[in-house]
Length: 474
Image 1 (cartoon, rainbow, N blue to C red):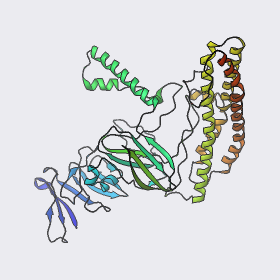
Image 2 (tube, rainbow, N blue to C red; image 1 turned 45 degrees about the horizontal axis):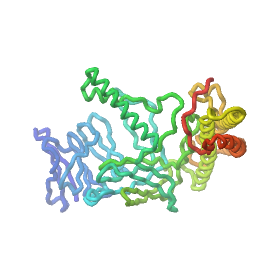
Image 3 (spheres, rainbow, N blue to C red; image 1 turned 120 degrees about the vertical axis):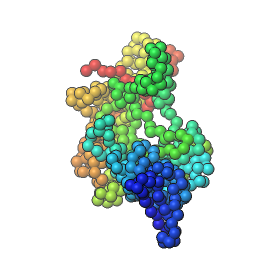
Image 4 (cartoon, helix red, strand yellow; image 1 turned 45 degrees about the vertical axis):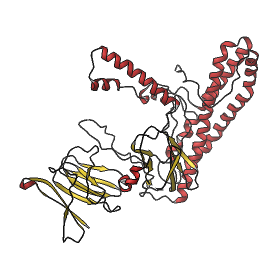
């Protein structure tokens, strides 16, 4: 089987000429159904992995056929109307060479390769993802995108997951399992409590703003949407910023895309946290599985995580790097979880202080101050802005967390100095953690006894912050 693209536009004929032969060129059949009669042909390519999957470029865009050219449909997506003089398929990507708008790349055509009528007929389908590489595709030179300086977007780093949902709105759960079948990461489409509250608050704000604009005589929907949509991002808000919400998988009707960054969960976050990494370590190369759960059914697909092909680290060195980074994550997580617990206990004490009096109130206040002091020994509570980092020294938790950047700055065993610094600060952190446990164990019973006498609920510490911390005067 062979294909040919030809044109006669220089003779005043704008029709597309795509032909197919299955007898070594003795006969040729036109294959243009679905392509506009005014878009002359530029190139045609067959996918090297799926026979009959064709891509054609014309003077106005790109088209795809799943039946060997019997029928074509537009593959425009966000590609503007532009002459596409040639196409290439390389490592699972479709590359379009345009005349006047540079190169365009459709990253990962795996869903097109696996698309079939049976997929669209079913309620749900999880596509088998292509191999993922332990590579950060970020890169770039730091130039921001603007109208005069458009910037192409790199593909997302990690494993790119595609799945099809016939109808949207159902709760979707995506689990990542290692070769032993253990769940190492799980994502859901459900909103967490903070995101849900934000959504309700945003809807309320939008209604108020929209009504205000209408009263001011602004009724054009485009203008209203532009003004109402200009809301403050969480990253732009003043201290304290809340802990980040976990990534959510989409659950819309049709094709959904989600990118897992190949990392296991990072340490627990707390309100206003600065100077502590929230990333977990990258998983090791090897075999993994994806499990999609929708409507009581499960769909599973295998995939491979492969090492950076530019690196030279051996399996043992990568395993040691992961072991150390996981140990570091667990160590920092113990500190951040303890801070959340200390804040929880303090908030409960402060809420009950007005109900206490005399010596009981003084003792309860002293316990709250003691817990605050332990937190200050674990974490620099005065670090509320970038300038504060120049004034107030880091505590042991930030110092340990900073080792992660050095330990994973390159693939391979971390340098000796990383182990030395960890051995220097880990025992200090452990002393503070034991001090926190002792304070909660020894000091709270007296406070709870006083609360019991007042028929008030006891203090029960949990690693959940009850409210955001108040700014500290510097």
